Image 1 (tube, rainbow, N blue to C red):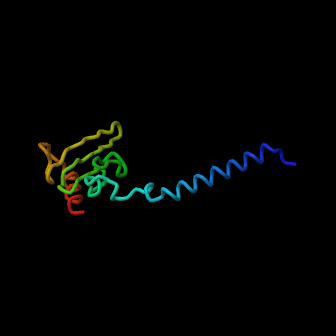
Image 2: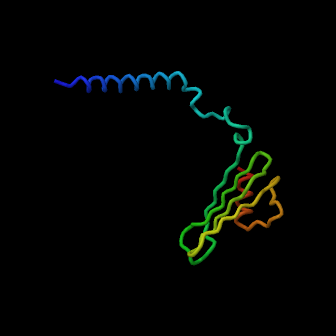
Length: 118
């Protein structure tokens, strides 16, 4: 014979699962992220990730450039340079498709052009 407490616990678990199902079914449209729910700046963002090897003594493409631009081609370039002893991270602002008072490396310029054209 199964003790009464186990029967009550099992019924409570099924009841909770059923209530969760009903809540999800009722609110499924509002729970899904859609582009209509996002701010306009995030709807049109351009993203490009470029991995590369800037140093001969480090194997693999451990360094990367992440370029994030909006519709006006303004945003930021984040560069991570990885060597054997240290990793350095740089952030450079971009306005209207050009660097904002900071020189870009050859790889950063390539990533910027790739992002603008995407």
